[in-house]
Amino acid sequence: MIRTQPIQLRVELKVDSWQHILYLVHPVEVQMGEAQRKGWLIDLATVGNVQKDWEGLKEQVRLLHEASQKLFFQQILIPNK
Image (spheres, rainbow, N blue to C red):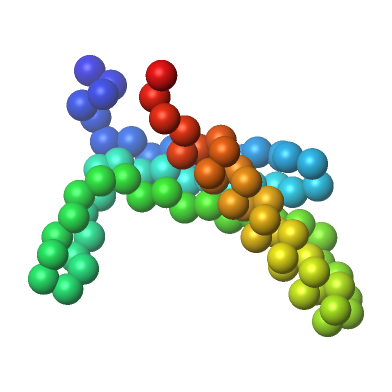
């Protein structure tokens, strides 16, 4: 029964110094030009402490992006076994 029902799920995960907020929605439909697609919406936000200087902020954004990619590609998009 649950596999046939729409789902909206919000999960907050603390990993190291990062707070990840993951939002999953199914089913969704999106119009891209002439094409219409159906599937999942996956929204991932990653939050960390903000540096006050531009050079520190630049490095923080790089690290934040790296942390988001690591969570997404190594923990979320994993093949079924």
